[in-house]
Image (cartoon, rainbow, N blue to C red):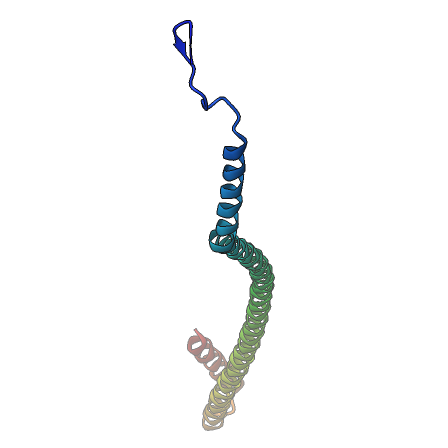
Length: 175
């Protein structure tokens, strides 16, 4: 058919063709059934596996987070215990140092009192020895003086001279 110089072809793409629509629909459904049997099952199962893998990873992440929080909490508790223990040790050390210092001070005081008492005893003994020596010397002088008096005549003038000599001798030995 030719009309006014344009050739119209029957069956152009824009013309609806019921047979073509029917066979296209049947082909589409057949391809759909084949894809469902062959490809759709594996694709869905892969997606489900992927979903399970992602869910498993999320669950592991939550478990790891919970575990890390638990470990962090335990670490904080242990740190608090360690701080308390360190403070206790420091306090006990200070108490022990104070106790040792007090004991050493008391020992030093007791030792110094012993030394003072010992020194006083020694001084007292030396004092007694000196007095004994002095008594012995005085007794010797008295005996010598008495001897001189007895040897001399019993004249009063001589007795006074002998006593004065004896007093001078005692004064000289003291100095």
